[in-house]
Each structure stands twice: as structure tokens, then as C-alpha cells.
Amino acid sequence: MKNTGSARNGISLQAVMQNAGIGLALLALIIFFSVTTEHFLTANNITNILTQITINLVLAVGMTFVILIGGIDLSVGSVMAFAAVVAGKAITMPGFGDAEAIALAIFAATMTGVLCGLFNGIVSAFWSLPSFIITLGMLNIARGGALQISGAQTIYSFPFAFEEFGSAMIYGVPVVFLVALLFVLIAWFILNFTVFGRLLYGIGNNEEAVRLAGHPVFWYKVAAFTICGLTAGVAAVVYMARLNISSPIAGIGFELNAIAAVIIGGTSLSGGRGSVIGTLLGAIIIGVLANGLILYGLSDFMRQMITGVVIIVAVILDYYRARFARK
Image (cartoon, rainbow, N blue to C red; front, side):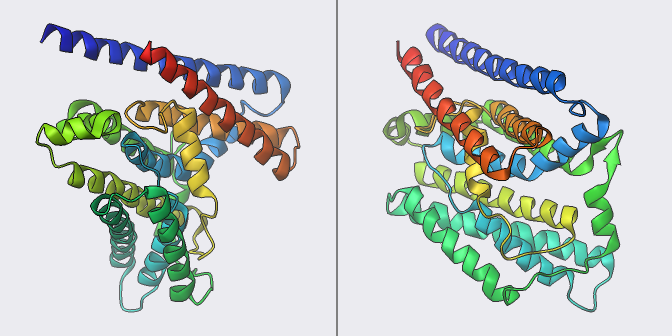
């Protein structure tokens, strides 16, 4: 028991040091843009950053669960669009009051995401297939479904109360960001204080050991993908509330941003190491970097190139972190 406690303390210390390093990188980025640009630290710009990172943060929280077990989900952007279109159809159905229509839309979006994630998890875990391939297939299924259901048309004219929620503020902080932060806290609790969360780490480290210990690895893996689908559905609701539309071409490339936030946040692509707090910091780093580069007047193409370089550097650092941990 003493050795186990020491190991857990070591893991906790390593996580704290890793998140501290990411936090210092974020602080350095904030100081740099604050000194070199005029409007970076203004209240309006900070509000814009928090609003802009919300969708990516929600998606990245779910992605963290999948990557911790050594998987990947390439479908979250398309699933978000699919869920948004289904919810858009629900919220514009005649015969419902505003409250009923909004509740129906939220239920439709989250259930669409859950079912897509459940499918990814069952197919990948049951046949022991690479999640990369399965979710690539779901990417096309969900995108095609979004285009088919919507007739390739944008859905709009949502209740005004829904739009108000998307633009609401509490002491200058966007409500949608607080929703994302709530998901971060829930995920943090699950991963750190529940048997389910600790077993996800165990599966990422040594799946066979978890199986031999008598735990149903199949259902834990399915649950991780289902949670990822759930967050895609929630991201669809946030997207709809922010823009007051549902577009079948929404979310293109969002899966890459979510994966980037998780990896920059220190979660290992091979699974078993990482934290959702790191994911939060990674999403903020991406948002701060994108915002700062916009203030510099750089083109979208240059911003994509620089973000790509940051992702590659993060993966290289993860390689050396893994070597250090093994030693």
C-alpha cells in the first residue's frame, strides 16, 4: 500500500509540474502579445477570446477521454454539424412554444452526439479496430447526414431566448464559456476521483492488465467514445446559440483543433497520461495564439501554418516527456 501511495504521489507531482509548464507557456504568450500589441488585454478582446475558444474547449474535453485510452476521434466536427442540423430541425418545428422548442433542440443535439459516439465506441471496441478508421467513416456518415437532412441549406430563425443565451454575460464572462468550464470541472472530477476515471488511465497504460483484473474494458472504451459524442452534441448547442443558425458545413476541421488542444495540454497520444486541466490550458493557448496573430494582421493561411508548427513542437515535447517518465 505504501508503494502504491508513493506512485500516486509521483503521478500527481508529475501532472502538477506538467500543467505548471503549460501554464508558464500560456503566461509567456499573454505577456508577449500584451507588450507587442495594443488591444490584446482590453476587456472586449478577452471576452472575444473566451467566446471563441468555447466550442473547441467543449470538444477537447470529450476528446481527452478518448485519447487517454489510446484512441482518437476524427468525427467530432462532423458529428457537431449533424447534431446542430437535427437540433435546428427540432427547434423550428411548428406547434411548440419557445421553451419546449429549445428543450427539444438540446435533447435532440445531445442524443445525436451520444448515439454517434456510442456507434464509434461499439464498432471500434467490439472488433478491436483502429478508432482512427472507424471515426473517419463516421466523419463521412455524419457530414452526409447533415447535408441530407438539411437539404444542404442553412437552418435559421431560432427563438430569441436561445440567441440571448448565446450572447449572455455574467460579470463580463460569456455564459457559454462558463458552460464549457462546468464540463471541464465535471471531467476533472470523473478522471481524478472515480474508479471509472482511473481505469481509463489504466486502459491507456496497459489494457491487458485492466482486463486481467476483471474490469469490462469493452464498456469503458465505449463509454469514453460516448462521452466524446456527448460533448460534440453540447458543442452543437453552443454553436447554434452563438450564431443563431445550423449549417451542415459547420465544424470542418474542428476535430483537428480539439486534438491539438489535448496534445498541447500534455495528454499523450499513446494514452495513459494527461489531464483535462492541461486540455483547458491547451485550448486557451490555441485561442490566445490565434487572437494575437489576428491582431498582428497575419492572414488565415499564416495562422494555420504557425498553429501547425506549435502542434508539432507539442508532440516532440510529449516524446521527450515520455522518455523522461520511463527513466
